[in-house]
Amino acid sequence: MAGSLRVIAGKARGRRLRSVPGDSTRPITDRGKEALFNILAPELPGTSFLDLFAGTGAVGIEALSRGAGFARFVDHNRLAIDTVRANLETTGFQEAAEVLRMDSFALLERPPDRQFDFAFIAPPQYKGAWMEALLKLDQHSAWLAPEAWVIVQIHPVEYHSAPLQNLAEFDQRKYGSVQFIFYAM
Image (cartoon, rainbow, N blue to C red; front, top):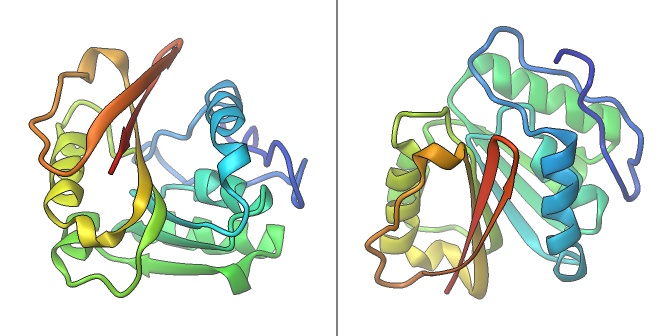
């Protein structure tokens, strides 16, 4: 997988992205990323994007490349944060980005310092962390703009419905071992 990550479209199209050393992250496949951004592309220009469990930063960087105005990358892993910073430098998006080395759950417990139009949740597989993050965003929905979308990336076997109060599931898409679930305010 190393060296195969790239920006698919937009200002940084074709730029190669670094992978996080080791196996602590699960990079999104090009097929999955392309499918996701075919859905999101019309909505992206000028928006703010929250990339939780950022890993390589490939999803938030793709959003910036396709016109998002700002992206915040959050990961507690130092190697992931170093990789995100290197990938932002490679693509030239440092000015439109903020990188936080911290636990994504801890961030969501804080009072929000801004609202996001999109929040992307792709934590390590099979640990239930996607549900915990989704429920925290649902509880602390002040992080989300009025018509925000939350997108969860999981393996299809991990899916089960969520007991939500502020968000509502409105779509699911499967691409091999990648499943995206879409929620809206």
